[in-house]
Image 1 (cartoon, rainbow, N blue to C red):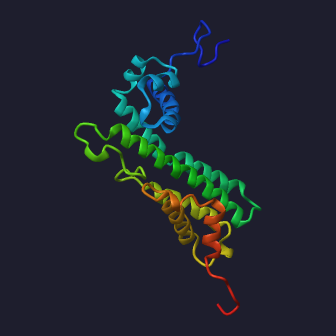
Image 2 (image 1 turned 30 degrees about the horizontal axis):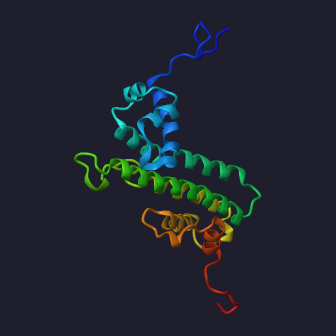
Image 3 (image 1 turned 60 degrees about the vertical axis):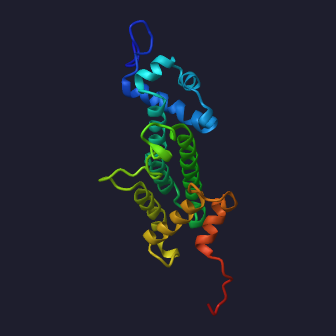
Length: 218
């Protein structure tokens, strides 16, 4: 009996245009992050398992493929799913442990965004009509009339603090905003290398404990 993805000859059914596009992007993003501006269209096609001609039947040119890869990295959906899973499975964990895990997730996303923007600038800076690298979208992937990704991330982080609301002296929403700001400030584009990386433990310790020694008087 044939499966839904098989033809009568037992071969996999042809991919839909959306599936082909997703498959190419899934291979493109890691290669762009690994090879940077030196990546060739042949390498991209080989990584995606397609001929160069197929690559450019899906994307008009290399520039369009790079912009699509940037958009995929900026999409917060996977990050939000990870944070939601963390909230759902962290029962019994301490606030410190939950936040360390959350910060690790945020740092991975932030570092990928920074890296893909560096690559995109290298590959798109000379694109006609788009001087100075302005061909790249907002670092946070914001589209007008949609919720800003940073707001969605802060909402997800608020849920983590809400699980431990009795342990903090500010509202879960404020705590989430503080923590998100600290993480993003240390991994954003243009931050000096001497300022990063802070480990998740350092970020969480800074937020929860501050920098001053505590005495009973203060």
